[in-house]
Amino acid sequence: MPQLNISVPDGLKQWAEARVAEGRYSSASDYIRDLLRQDQDRAAELRWLQAEIDKGRASSIDPRPVREIFAHAKARATNG
Image 1 (cartoon, helix red, strand yellow):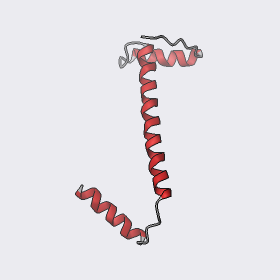
Image 2 (cartoon, one colour):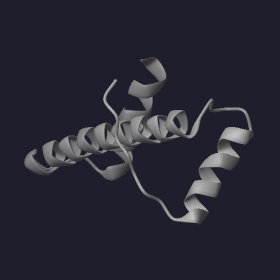
Image 3 (cartoon, one colour):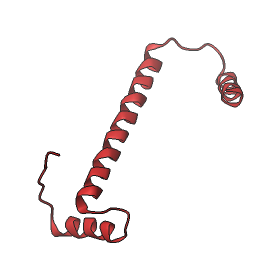
Image 4 (cartoon, one colour):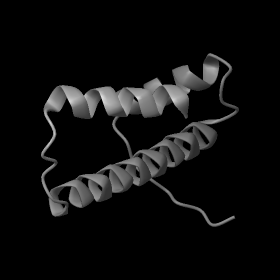
């Protein structure tokens, strides 16, 4: 596995070591890998959300009243 060496201030090093000491992570490297994966997941979610926003902005305006739109959306969510 390729290596990535980083420098962090003492406070962050102590934080990472404390997370390892809690037992959820086997090492500081394991903790950092998990943080990177979480960041990747968040970035993917944001890309999806931005794409949905872009689709909404590009679509035409729905002529129905807002209450009707929400009722329709709620019915779709309830009925699958």
